[in-house]
Figure 1: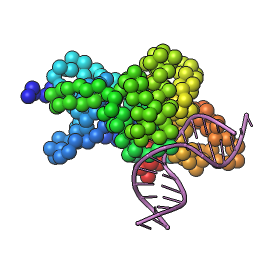
Figure 2: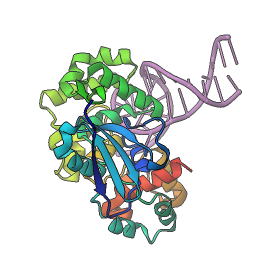
Figure 3: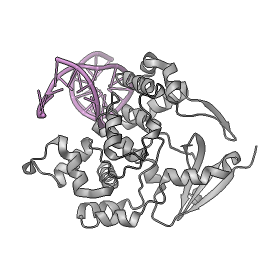
Figure 4: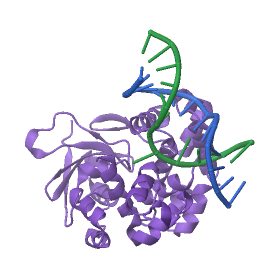
Length: 292
DNA sequence: ATCGAACCTCCAAT
DNA sequence: AATTGGAGGTTCG
């Protein structure tokens, strides 16, 4: 048994690791049992197919991983957690709004993640007409059925499957796992990706409109799912997913009936209202309402 | 163009 | 104990 490698990130801005990892953006993180009391809770998950364990103590995030990843794990974690986001500017855009001000005070340090685009896409196709425990379950099942086996000093684990690995499963395989009507969407997305019809990993960096158009062309992906993928994996901080909760919040606090904004325009209305960090606004609004 | 209903499956609430 | 309704949405008519 090799001694685990522990690295530390010193935070220069507010960060709340626990709220961030379990805020409904990512679905494979889990808390480890019996934390050694004082040193905080450890969370286990994968970043770039590397298994890492993270915990936050005050302004430090500790990273434990297999020593073979020592060279690049810190950078990978920093990128994934978006520790460099300029929270002062982001909070500034929310400061004139009393409702948002309370949300930022309450969940200060909550961040958007920078996930793998392919995994994020499949995850949010799964989210359609679904609930969080079952999304987690489906993602775990697809990894255990089609992901690669990797081994580190903790033991064996499974990566999130690539498009060709999902092709091996096929629509029927996905149905057998319980994906239901989402099976054909995911199977089709995997075929499109593996045949080069869409290149998910090359979308990051392109314009908002271009990425949205590409994503919408995938079956099972509408405006909401596309905006989730763009926000949580493609650096589009202006993306604004409108789901049932956000719609409720907007209708209760911002856009009343007499404003005559139809549901179909709620997303663009919000992007105009909240600006280039609308995605961050969305996350704080959603988080506040969900845990209310 | 716009608007409901249907969709797999699980599970909590009758 | 069997049934119904709904879940972070999309598609089809």
